[in-house]
Image (cartoon, rainbow, N blue to C red; front, side):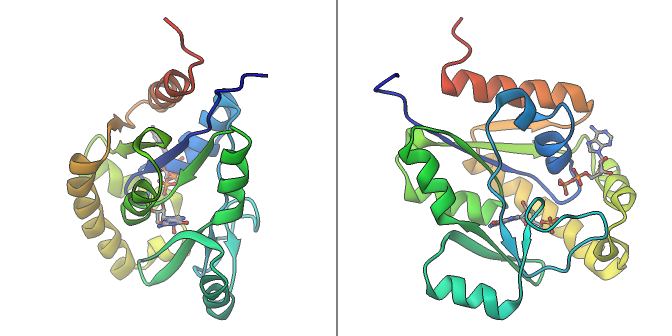
Length: 201
Ligand code: ADP
Ligand code: 5GP
């Protein structure tokens, strides 16, 4: 046992459709390569056709979400595109207490909240950029979730992307471009392994 081993929180953010879940949770992705799990958030957003409750998100009602806020069950929560998203506090704190790390796939508002809650060395902020706006738009429509097909929501998501990117340049330590998927996965895996001390060159 290593007595001085401390867990870290890896915050991974990026515009909707940039490829976060593919990079983090996909086959051969960051979770598989690092062995660090991603904490499953709760959301009031409707469940997408291919999404699995308890794996992609905990899909809950607005009332259930409000109850959790009241019970202080969230580490942070935020409204993103008219829906609420929150990170379960217990799961994160239990892992940190055991010296284990965790990945949070959350937006920049959530990322900044988490950063203020812990000492600097505990939180590592990673932002994923698209190679271009056009590519981001293509990926969003390729994903084909019902909300992406609604052009008003799609427009909102794109507009929000530029705000998130501007914020990220100020507050995130690592900016990774998701052009070739494998390269992005390897880059983020490298950042994480360096931070956890697995890369010891
Ligand atoms: P996010 O979780 O950021 O909203 P997703 O992981 O759902 O994004 O990815 C959006 C779409 O883009 C998916 O169809 C995914 O297969 C595709 N995608 C992700 N990364 C790449 C990449 N590097 N090259 C091409 N397509 C990609
Ligand atoms: P989506 O609906 O595309 O899955 O997610 C929309 C946005 O909400 C993404 O930027 C995603 O990272 C963010 N998000 C997901 N879970 C959480 C969470 O628990 N907290 C916060 N603040 N944002 C989240």
